[in-house]
Amino acid sequence: MEPSFRPVEVSFPLPKHPHVNLHVHLSSLGNCTMVHLTTTNLDQSDRGLPPLGSFVYAMPDVMNDRNVISTPLTTSGSSIDYATRMAKILARRMKKPVYVGCSMNFAGMTAEEEMEGLTVAVEKIMQNWNERMA
Image 1 (cartoon, helix red, strand yellow):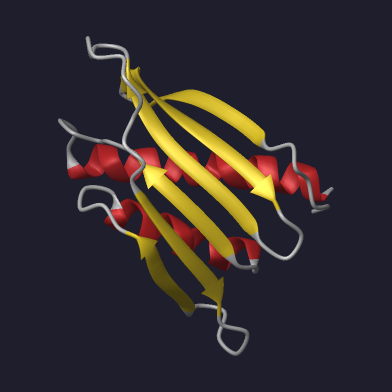
Image 2 (tube, one colour; image 1 turned 180 degrees about the horizontal axis):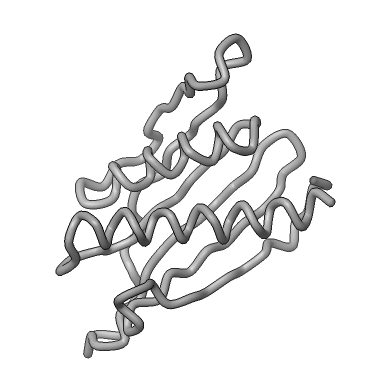
């Protein structure tokens, strides 16, 4: 993937919750990738900006494909788990360091629906990343 200062921006509704949109901002910075994630809820009357959320760095272990090293750079209690999980998954799949900023809010959803949202986000990110790699 060539370094680019023009990010790919993707937005899509979550399965089973069409009123919740997931927004992805994907940038290739040469030796690493930066991803920012947030959600918006059409049912909310407050249209303010979402909180900044958590920011996590993850990099794959060159000796073991399954091991990923990560560290939180900025933490927010509600999003640190999502940011860490997403950073580790993307670093493993992309085989390069990843920075993930995350302010996704899955309030009111079941654990299965949260995991489904994360799965769809990973699929969309990897689809866009693979298209830029080709």
